[in-house]
Image (cartoon, rainbow, N blue to C red; front, side, top):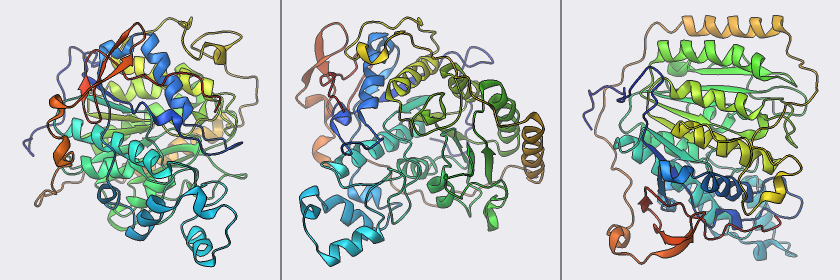
Length: 450
């Protein structure tokens, strides 16, 4: 790509309807299980994918199975000793054993109750990170306008420790890949929790601007105060939008749209990453916001309208039937279709009773975000943005090498394919790293009880 070329993409109108969408999905992602009673359930990704297939959305986009991120890929952000540990530790190594050295390492890397050791932990992290790195490569090569990875969005992981159910920060890895070709990247986070791991990674640089809309206070982590704005060259390039319980669609958009509009005008990002954590939906088991599926998706719809390369990621979300609804609908927004509210019959149909609809109604809870407080928050953040005189400019040096698949996997067309269920019949599926414009991967789409 020409480094001096602009970031605007071809479209047929101001709302950028004609977009090339690439969607990453690892068929085995839903097999991973954090443990009995743990709120994080990767099965929700399989449910969202299955729902999207039954709506026929896979026919409107390129579907890719990601290459697993290698340990070297992951070490581009995470410390070597941390990667060595999470890639080697197993449940058998810790059950019933009192090894002081192992106990010290687990404590050092914050591995425990919230971030347990489960079977396939590193494989799960490789799939998540591989999808986000692959999405970045697609955008870098201009092979896609929008790249989706619902297994990504694990925004809490730090350089040398796990945090908040997250082990590998796929978002940071994806942004680092984007920075090889894009001078400025905007990261927007609408998870109910603060995007602390991503903010921390880029807190001292102006090449990445982070904007996080999140619940602040009570038992939630103390990061994400409105006064946390970045440091040194990164000052004013971290924006935090702290919110109280019960925020609804209207109140949320009253902040989101003017702030993001101003950020796009002032910062002029060449690529955007949107973390769509679904725990900000009404009725989430761990969240306290009150957004509808449409209200949540309106953030994606708004960012899509700017016609800038866009990476769309998952994140939190613990009422899994609503996570599936949300990410399915947001996949539809990406490809610019409006799916029927009545759900098609699918392998997880019983999860969506008794209404069996795509959309959910907000609950009758108090919105503890008063108009006065919201206006004050908006004004403070707009004042911060006014201090950014112009978009920062970066002189590219020698670019790091692009991510490439393992040598033996480069000739993807010659590799053996396996049958998959595309919602109607069995067909062939791309192997890891391969893409198909007409078929999704869903061989393992059956209820697991997780």
